Length: 146
Image (cartoon, rainbow, N blue to C red; front, side, top):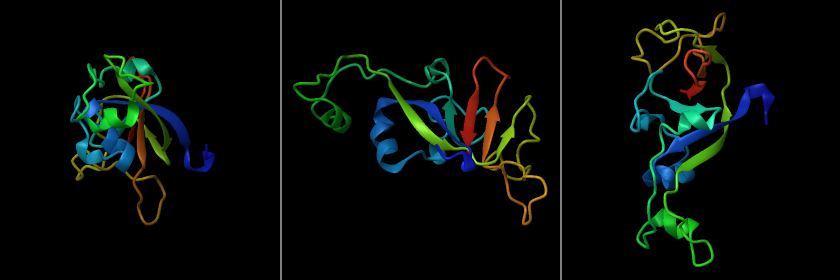
């Protein structure tokens, strides 16, 4: 782990139909909220507890020969077990994080429509924070990279 960029291991839960796209292309904030909304703006969402990502996964219930993901993961010696839920362990560079302490909008750039965070104090030129950490607000911590 690279500590100079605040790199951490976090979890991401997703639907079966987007697993291959994420593996091939990485996370894409343009699809933020497609599974369950965007409480903290449009970004890539992660958690440090599997209980949180459980809200975002949907079951992959049966093997299909036509499914490209199944072709990559399963064969005669490794059969699809039924009711698979996909959780990814990701190396995430949080960079400079803003700590989201309570439900208010001051963490965001007011003209960005929740797509950009506020600026890091005393930076020239003004540079926005790279990620948001919502810890201690809800039951689970959330991490959002913009």
